[in-house]
Structures are given as C-alpha cells and as structure tokens.
Image (cartoon, rainbow, N blue to C red):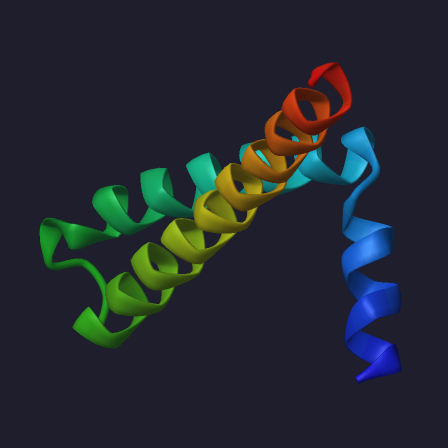
Length: 74
C-alpha cells in the first residue's frame, strides 16, 4: 500500500501530469492512425486503451487538486 501512496505522490508533480497528457493524446492519435488496416487490430486496442487510461489519470489528478483548493478555501 505504501508503494502506491509513493507512486501517487510522484504523479502529483505537474511535469509528470503534462507528460501523461501529451502521452495520452499521442497514444490516442496513434491508435486512430493505425486503424487504417495497416497493422493488427490488437495494436489499435493497446494504443486506445493506454491513451484513455493516461488521460483518466490526468483528470483524476486535476480533480484532486481542485478538491484540495476548495477544501482550503472553506
């Protein structure tokens, strides 16, 4: 459990969040690009699922920051 807490704290840095955002968009773009039938469909699923997971992590971290700020203001 401590490992996950440390990993979450590491992801809390904004440069990592920006990297995940860019990585997620890039993976989604690649998934769309490879969907022309050039490659195996498994790669398309990999790119799309990985990209969506990265963007979900970014959304969760931003939501966490917003909730912290609201909590401090009240």
